[in-house]
Image (cartoon, rainbow, N blue to C red):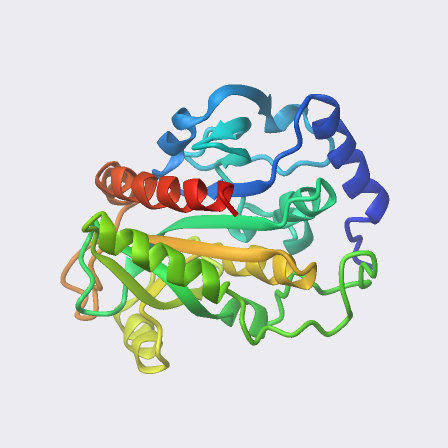
Length: 281
C-alpha cells in the first residue's frame, strides 16, 4: 500500500520553518534550473538548507542550490525556493509538492512558479520568457496526479476545479509590466512531462499538435496542489532551447543553465515590477 504525506508531516515541516522566522512571508517563489540567481535580490535573508527541514525533498540536480531564502524581495516578504525537486528524481508526487503545502500552511496566498522550458512554438527562441496562461497536465493524465491518495480536506475538495489554473489578474498585470519595461513576453501553454529524458522530434510534433507552446518537467504538479488549496498562481517559463522538431540539434542541461544567465535579468525585472505592485495592493 502506498504511503502518502500526512497533515501531521506537513505541519511538522511548516513549524520548523515558522520557528526560524520573525515575519511571515506573503508570497512564495520557486526558482527553476538556471534561475536561482534571482534569490540574491532578497534583503537580509533567513537561509534554511533543505536538508535541515523535516520531510523536505532534497534536490539532486546541478543548478539547484537546495535552500530556502526568506526575506524582503522588492518590498514583499517572500519565501524563495532556490531549486526544486522533480518526479524523475525518484520522489512521489506528494513529496514533490510538499513545499506548496507548507507555503499554504504558512498563510501564503500567491505563488510564483518559474521553470526552464524547451520551445515547441517555432516563434520562441532561447532567452525568451513565457507567462503561462494554461497547461496540459500529461503527467497527471497518465496517472501521476499530485492529489492522488487520501484527500487533505483542510486544503480543498476531492475534485478541485482547474478552469483557471493561472491567475488572470496577475497575468494582465505582468503583461503590462513587460510592456512598460519593453520586455518581449509570450503568453502560452506549458506541457509537463515526467522526464528526465528530453523529447524526441516525434514527441515535440505531437505536443505541438495538441496546442503546447513550451515543454518541461515541473510546475504543473505544483500548480494543481496550489489551486486545490485556492492559492493564486503566476508562472513563467524561461525558454532555454529551440524546438528540435526535425532532430538535427542536441539538447543538453548545460544549454538550459546557460540560457538562464540571459533570462534572469528579464525575469527579475518582471517579478520586481509585479511584487512592487503587489505591495501596494
